[in-house]
Image 1 (cartoon, rainbow, N blue to C red):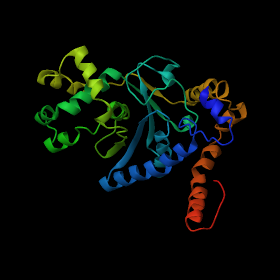
Image 2: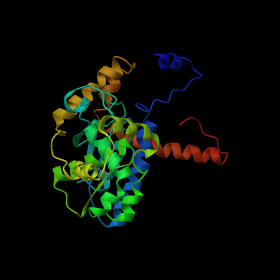
Image 3: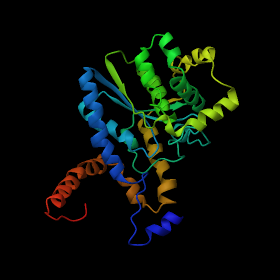
Image 4: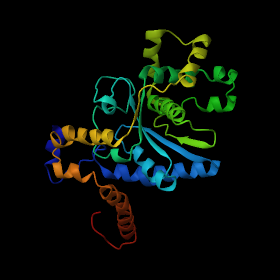
Length: 290
C-alpha cells in the first residue's frame, strides 16, 4: 500500500522487479548470451534452461536460448511447499528468493515448457553437504578441487536450481552431450544462520549423514513435474489476474495483450532503442527517455 502511495507522486519512479520489463530484457539478452557461449565452448547441445521464479526475470533467458536451439526446454521451478503454478497451491517454504505466491507480471508463461517442484528440506541438506562436505564428495568420486570450489559458491536457491536441473534432465532423458544450464543465484554468505538452525533441528552433519545426503542429488525422482500444455499455460496466464488486475491496477486489456507473442517480442527489441539512446547521451547527442 505504501508503494502504491509513493507511485502516485510524479517525482517518484518505483522499480518493481516483478513487473519491470528491464529485468526481463536483461536476462533475455545478457544471461542467455552467457549461457549460449558456455554451451558452445563446451561443444554440447542445449537440452534445457532451468530457473526458479523469484521475479521470473532469469527464466526469460530460456526464450532467447530457444531461438538458437529450438529443441531446448525452458523449465520453471518452485517449492513443493508452495505450489503456486503446480496446482494453484500456497504455503510457506525456506527457499529464500523464490516462490512468492503469485505469477509475476514479467513471466512469459506462454514460453515455459515444464514446471519442476523441489523440496525445501532437500535444498537445505544439499546446501550443507556442498558447504561442509567436500571431503566426502571427493571420497565418492567428485574431483577434489572441484568439490572444494563449491564451498561458499551456493545458496539455497542455487541448490534448488541444481536439484531441479537433475529432475528435468532425467524427465527428458537427456544424455551427456546435452547441456542443462541453470544459475547459482546466490552464494553462501547470506545463509550461515540457516545452517545453524538446521543444526539445532537435526544435529551436526557427521560423515555418515553426509554420505546419506548424496541421495539428495543422486536420488531425484520425476515427482512434482507438470508439462506446460496450452491449457496449463492458460491457467498460469489467468492467475496473473488476481494479483495484477485486482490488486496492482493493471487492466484486463494489459493482461490479454500478453497472450500475443508480439507483446514479448516488442519488449525484447526495445533493448536496441535503449542502447542507442544510452550511446547518444554518452556522446552528447541527447535523446529522450527510453
